[in-house]
Length: 506
Image (tube, rainbow, N blue to C red; front, top):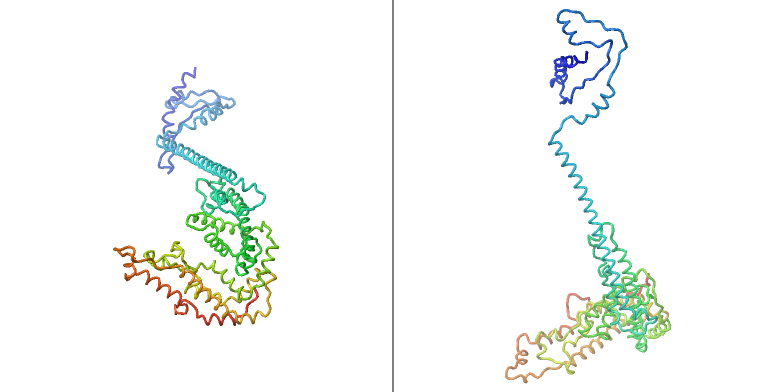
């Protein structure tokens, strides 16, 4: 029956609970903003019999005494279920702030989106790098296949007998111009090939190795054979023999020090004047020069791969050993011309743009072909030849390796005393022969054949006459002893040649 009075008893607690909660959560008591989630009621410990709270309150209002508790053991009900099934389970029912929830969602989804974008970008970058490197590998492989097909006849040959360099330019160009080849080796790696997947360095290393091997097999072998043939052809002329023998020994790795600039300049002059002359061969000569420079740059860390013709070398050295000291000195000076890059005296250029109107060659050839070697000009004599004279004694010692054991000559100090005047006398004869030989091929054109215009005669009589320009230039270049301000005194150079004994090379 008491259960029917429970609602009224429970409702009677409203005032007390409200006062308790208001006092407990009074904002003035604490600076912490605390929100009340809820107030839970549960049966606690019951002592004695059930108490009718309503009747007890009425009795107290009328002055009645509270009934004493009946005897019995206290009992606890529902505490476990209240904590586990209600309080803890409803811990998330505190409040719901839409703005906070929206911000949290934005942060959460924004972070997930950023992670997704970063992952997609990383995967895309790796995919781009992978595709770029795969394309690089494929293009390099294709180019190498084309090279093998082009160079197959040259690569199959076990011996080299021809010296024609035109056949090797194409295959060497293919190797040099590989997508990851020697030509582009100094360029930075493209960004799309990086990101940890770059294969360019490996391909470049392999390409350089293949290019170096091709240069040795296709180019150096033919240069050595050509040098051997040149040595054989000039065996009876020791002065002309010196330069090809020196180049041959350098190419074969038998020189104490390889002068790359000398080799390039000597080969360039040989190609221009003898093997591939003319404007039509200019591009081929330039390509050969590029391959030659690459060959000399790539062989520094490797031993020679070809054995030289030792009997030929010894025969050439014996021939050189029969030269006089003056002949050897003259050969040394002429050998240094290739690296000095002296400017020749061109009659067509010095005569001005109208020189073709007044002059022509006796043989009917091109006037631009009449040139005086740069060593036989005022600048060549004062800035090059005299300086070579001042150090010729030391040069003779430094270049002893070219002659081998056949270059030993006795009483060299006495010969050095006469060397300077003897070389100058020889130079004077060669100087006169060079100028007379070129000027002897020049003649005037007929000036009255173009009447009534007389263009040639007008050009000859003008203030800027090609005749005046050419003759003034010839006078300047042949006056070797005039003061120029940029050349040493000839007497000082000759005296220095005789007084400075040679030093043994370190």
